[in-house]
Length: 228
Image (tube, rainbow, N blue to C red; front, top):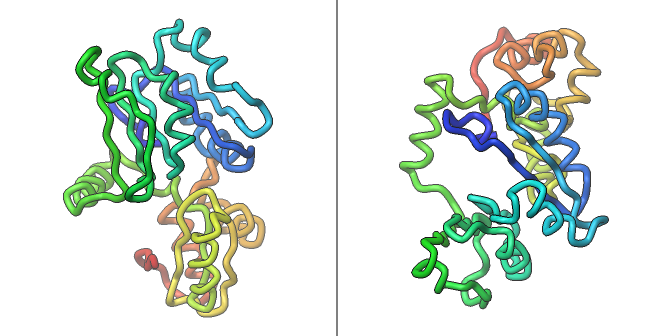
C-alpha cells in the first residue's frame, strides 16, 4: 500500500506468498487502487507454482532484475531465494528480521561491485512512527485500508490470538466501549450491519464513518478509534 501511495511510485509491484488467501486480499483491497494510479500489481503464489518468481524476471524486468526486493519472512532460505531477482544496483530489505545468529548467504561483494544496498529491520523507530502519523494526518496515507477485523472488549483475547496466528491479512481493532461484539472480519461486519456497510463506501474499507456507525449500533454516539 505504501508503495502504491508514494508520489514516485513503482510501475510494477509483485507480491508473493506461499498460499493464496493473503494474495487474494491484496487484490481485493488494493487492486483497483493500484490500477487507478497506473501501477501493474501482480500477485504470485509460490506454494503451487515452483519457480514462479524467477519466471517473472524476463517479462517484467527485461532480465535486469527488480529495483527493490523486500522479504517479510524471517527465513534464510526466503532471503537467498530472492537474491537472483535483485537488480545489480537494487536494494534488498530483510524486513521481518532473521533471528540473531542465523547465517544467511548474501553476496556482500555486490555492494562494492555494482552499488547494491542490503539492509534490514525488525521494527520501526519512534521517528518512523511519527512520520507515519504526520503523513496520515496530511492525507498521504490511508490507514483505513490496513484494518481487517474489529471486535469489542470481550474479544480482546481472541484479537491478540488472531494476530499471533495471522488469521487476518491486516490490523485488528478492539473497541473497549463495545463489550460483547465478537471478533469479526470487515466483510462480516458489513454483512451484519447494513449501516456500517454503507458507511464503508464502494471500496468496502474501514472508515471513520463506519466506526461511528458501529458505535451507534451498540448504543454509543461515535468518537475516535480505541485500538489495542
